[in-house]
Image (cartoon, rainbow, N blue to C red; front, side):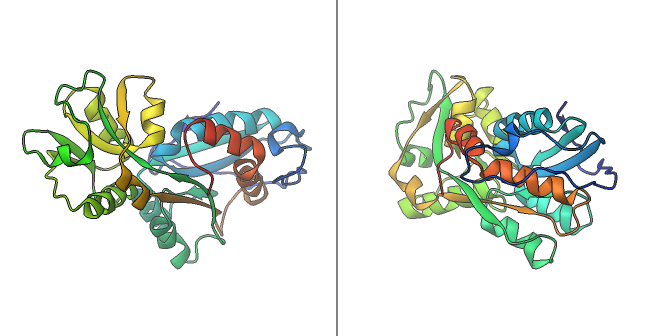
Length: 262
């Protein structure tokens, strides 16, 4: 079973080596190979909120291929997760929504060399009935339009700031949220008329919100890096989870959800 961790409730046993080779472009993916050991293990993954659906799916696949292993996730703002890691939270893998938030961790010598595994692009999210009749990015500058944005210190907020700057627009949001899921929730509940969120989050809403593409999004694409943490308690299993994310199976899950190849 995959659990979402509270911010600090992370307890890990000493990891044992797994007998599963990594896979990138081979015919067999990590999630399709049998695990060589039956001892219980845990792999703790800190991941950006926008990866919730895809990583939960990959975690289940990893557990199925590694009987006795549990993948535990802590999803949230990449900036918050990076600070937790710097402050000593134990984990095995970090998947961030921007190179800047990953750099916080690598600058502290807490992770190996990160690999960019996907990219994500912004869309304007509006309620399904689009009551404010938002059609393009400049509509968000209308003071009558209630807008939600991610806080600028988190990756979705930094991307939104770049997109708005590229369009030469000043937008005054009615709320600043700490991650993209919270921002999208404001739209889904009808508390705002529009928000700037990732394309993947619009797709994951299953029609509860409508996504509007806009050209300035091409100037605000976020690269997503992933790395095994230097002091990962489940070191070998952590590397194998990263292998799964980078494998063909991982790419298929991620691109189906709307992520773009790097």
